[in-house]
Length: 286
Image 1 (cartoon, one colour):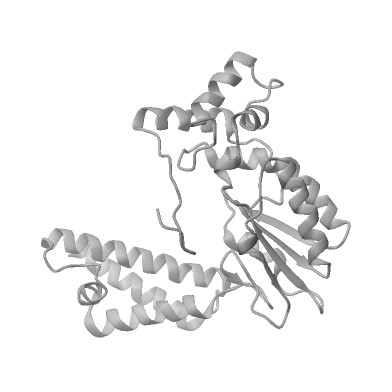
Image 2 (cartoon, rainbow, N blue to C red):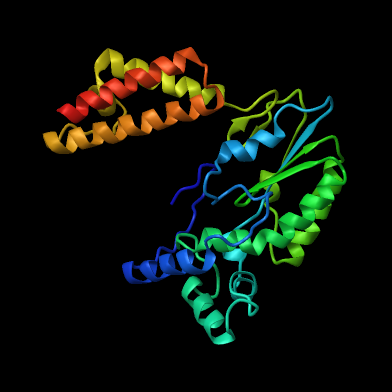
C-alpha cells in the first residue's frame, strides 16, 4: 500500500485460518501484558492525541525532535519476538517456539498480522523504559507511537540523536535520517499530525479540508460532491451509491469528532458535527 510520504508499505496479511489463530494468541497470550508508559500506539484508550499532549507548550527555548525507525516491523526478527513476547519464564520452550513461528513470517514480524502491534510494544519495552528514564533525568519528554519517536524540552538534539541511534542499532534497528525533524518554537511543531506549539490541536489544513467538504456537501449534495472528487462514477446502482455516501459521511463525522477531541468548545465544528449527523440520519432513513 502507498505511504503518505511516498513509497510503499508491504503488508503481509495472514489468511483467515491463521488470522483466527493469531487473534487467539493476542487474546490469551499478549493482551494485558505490561508495556512501557512511553508507548502510546496499539493501546486501548490511547490515541494520537495522548501521544502529542505531553509535548504541548512548555518552557522558552523548547525543541521538538522527531525520529523515525526505518522498516520497523521488518527489523523485528524471530529471536527478539521469542524473547520478548514468549519468554521461557512464562511459556515452555516448545510452546514459545511454536507461538513465535505462528506470529512471524520469513523469520520477521509481519506488518498486517493482528499480533504484530502488541508484540512490537513488548519488543520495544526495554528501549522505551531506558530512554524514558534517561530523558527524565534531563527534563526531556519522550513518547513513541509505533515507529515515530518524539522528544521535547530544552536539550542538545545531537546528543539525543546519538544516544537513541546507538541503542536502536544495538537492537537491530536503524533510523531513517530523511525523516529526522528538529523544530524550535518559531516553527510549526507537530507530533502524530497534531500541532503542539501552545496546545494540542489539529492542523489548519486538516480543519480547512473539513470545511471544504461540508461546504460542497451543503451546496451540491453529498452524491454530486462524491462524483466531483471521483469517489462515485455515476455508474453505480442506487444501493451502491447510497452505501458510498453513508461511508463518506461516517468518515467525515469521525474527522469532525477528532477536531472536537482537541477543541471541545469549537462552535464551528460543533455545528458541523450536528449537520453531519443530520445528513447521516437522513441517509439512513432513505
